[in-house]
Image (cartoon, rainbow, N blue to C red; front, side, top):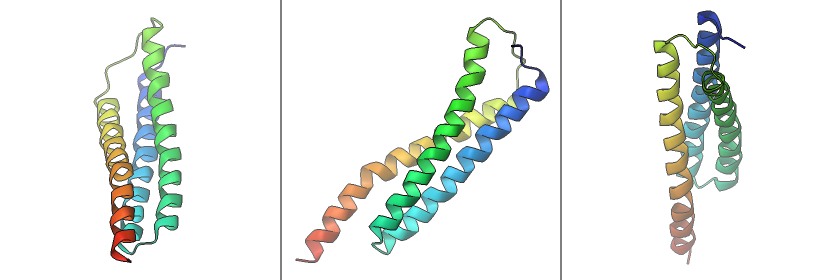
Amino acid sequence: MVKTKDNINTIAMEVILNAGNGGELIDKALEEISKFNFNRADDLIDEATKDIIKAHNAQTSMIQNQVSGNDVEYSLLFIHAQDTLMTIKSRLTMFKGLEPIIKNLYERSKK
């Protein structure tokens, strides 16, 4: 299926909105971590991960479309969407790496 300029921009906005929602949830999870509300932070990160997966799947559909030989018009908005997704995914990875360290330090401080 050939994607028109409108379609690529629609998919770009889907990526941006879902990645952005994920980013907001990561911010909220960071707030909860700062209060040592680990269960709430984990719930927020689970939600963020789902939004980021939605964004990733939308991006992948466009890439697969082009790899399949369909002509896809250049879209600065789509490039911005990919950049947004990459940035938010990096923040999620960082959160998931730091959370166990914070939990460990918190538990040690209680002893």
